[in-house]
Image (cartoon, rainbow, N blue to C red; front, side, top):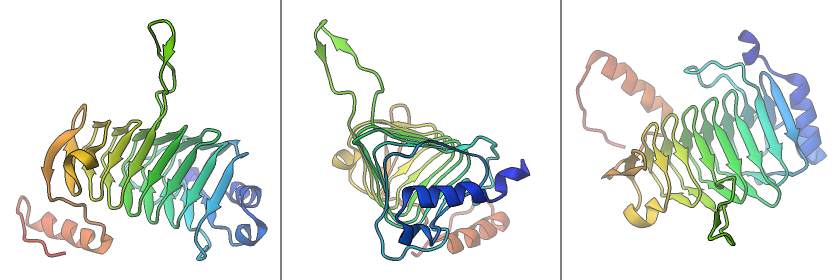
Length: 245
């Protein structure tokens, strides 16, 4: 299992020079750890920032300590994948983008181990997105349904996940879902629909299907403050404090 944490130098070199122009590849922005499975790299990989730097996009890294997995990182891209800046993909991630589809990641994106992102049309992530382990984000139903023997509806849509959103463990995001800024999705929830239009920003949703629980919430993006709070509540258990952002 320790092999998972070791840098995969061959995959890192191969991937950067395979998918990026030389002036970007030489900076090695993509880093891979552990096993990798590059199923299809015929699509486009774009890094849309001038500040490209060493190791800014990591797959299979050890930033997540909750889940241990020897499942390989799997990448299938025959469409377009866009990175705006830093991104962290934990272990066993399955990333699939179909032809003519676009998958876009904003700044400071993070997703937990054994998660799946399947894009047949368009999936857009904003900035400061935190996704837990074993989550699924799909913009397609995969198969078609024939109605009245001769009518077939489009089985793909769009998924929009805006800034500062936190998605709990084992949540599923289905096609035509929009999550507004500062949305929190409870663990094991199934999201389908435009929650932004219905409930606006800063909401907690949970359930199957996911429903509005309460508003005026946001997850803490400051990791230093988060560690301070862990320390505080380890001593002052089951207490609530007044929080100033």
